[in-house]
Every structure is written in structure tokens, then in C-alpha cells.
Length: 75
Image (cartoon, rainbow, N blue to C red; front, side):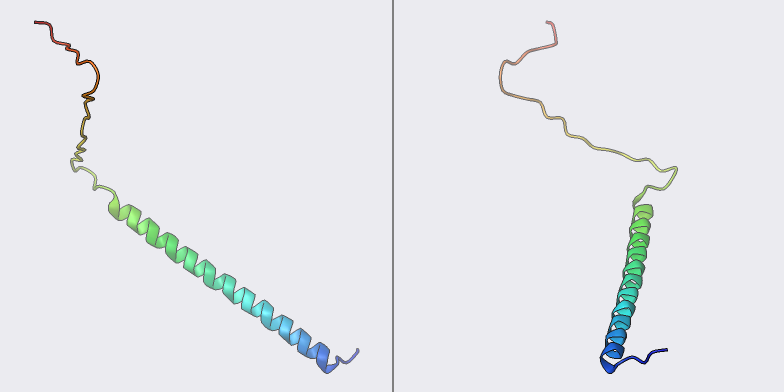
């Protein structure tokens, strides 16, 4: 078994700390992602109409007024 020099020991500790920071960062990002997906799902469920209720849609019909005005009604 070979002994590590102080420089090698510090380098290994630095690498280990970096790996640990990366692992915790990934964990935190995953928690944030799961939380965000849960909030989005909750909002989607809440925005849907309840079953059995009437849903009404209003639409505005635009009639073009330019050009020749034709009539579909015969006198």
C-alpha cells in the first residue's frame, strides 16, 4: 500500500467534494422538477370543468364587408 502525498490527498478530497456537490445538485433539481410537475398536474385538474355541468362556448362570426355584397335570399 502506498501512502498519498499531501497534494494527492487534497486533490482526492477536492474531487470527492465536487462529486458530492454534483450529486446533491442533481437531487435538488429532481425534487424541483417533481414538485413543478405536481403543481402543473394540480392546476390542470382544477381547470377542467366538473362532469355533468353545461359548458357554453361563445364565438363571434366575422362577416366580410368588402367586395360585392351578394344575397342568398330570393325576393
